[in-house]
Length: 103
Image (cartoon, rainbow, N blue to C red; front, top):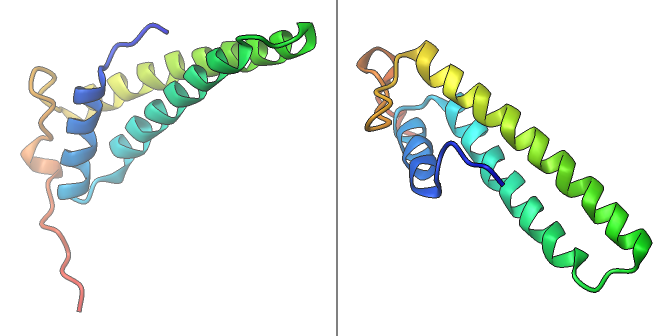
C-alpha cells in the first residue's frame, strides 16, 4: 500500500490535534491507521483462501487501498488549508486552543 504519511507522522498529527482540541485532522489520521489495519488483515486472510475467499479479500483490499489514497490526499489538503508546518507536522498557532478543563 502506497503511503504519503508514515505511522510516526500520523501519530504526530493525532497528538497535535488532541492536545489543541482540533479533532478533524486526528479523525482523518485515525481513519488512515484503521484502513491500513484493514488492508493488512485482508492480505493475511487471502493466504490459503479458496477461490471465493480470494476474490472477497481482494475486493476488500482494493477498496481499503482506494479509500486510503483518497483520505491521505484529503489529510494533506486539510493540513495545507489549515496552515500546518508540513516539515514538522505542527499545528499553526491560530488553530491552537487551550484544553478545556473538566469540572
